[in-house]
Image 1 (cartoon, rainbow, N blue to C red):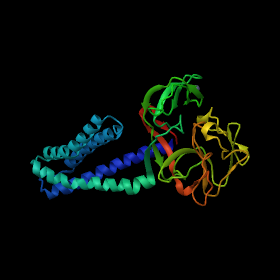
Image 2: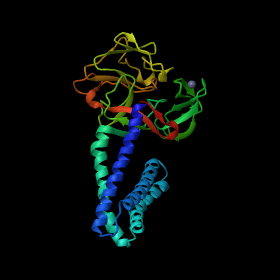
Image 3: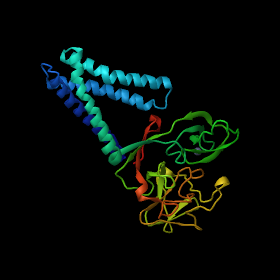
Image 4: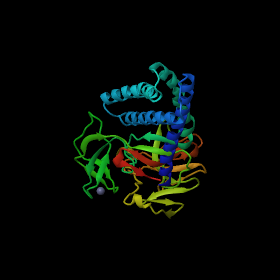
Length: 340
Ligand SMILES: [Zn+2]
């Protein structure tokens, strides 16, 4: 909860930075264009209007990135109008100058976009927060990717599964998982495809047990995965009787995972001996983590990995591959959730 608050405050911080820098560059531009009667009140008023409108367009562009092509074109046109035409009109009317002088006064504010971009690329994203869109459902129901929805036959809660690819559609039962972690075979998921959750990840946190972590997939570091951290450096992990045993002691699951049964036997095409069972316990090095998906029956996670990072156990995520801890699901709004 507190890190979700920090995430929201950090967004506010970026806003304040944008606001101050835009205002400063506008002040420079007004001097350069020799605009008479520049007052702080007018500069602040013009800055508020322009920055607010920019935010509306940015939010619209962000949230329509999976929308229709028509919406995307509207967003691009809107961005063009608002980033160029609106500021010059606002400057021209606020300071009662001609269009040309308004353009001249506006020009230096372009540098504020550059400084904002540099701040995000070199400071905010690597060290503070980064956002991701989730494609897959190994972490369902906690975090979902592209999915179908249904209704759980056991409890009536919403239930989720990955959409089958077109051409491969089989009219038969599919494995789904509901908000209470009931895994059921369903014949009738709704066939609309819903988009993946958008999550915020704190880059400055060290993962603790039960945290949701984003990391570089050990077998292909170009791909990012999100899973739940189960085993910490130096521990022995065994999955047994649906639960997690660390160094021989059964762990109490957090309340939010009530009903989750961890699977320690592979079925079907995943039939192989898994890591983290009583026959093949996972022993973690002093900079290694063991991670599992919440949709245990379908998650491809530490249990299955055959090839790890050089010098590390095959089932381990080395500390160097950890990217951060998930704090918040911030979109879509009905899936909003503070994880931490
Ligand atoms: Zn259920």
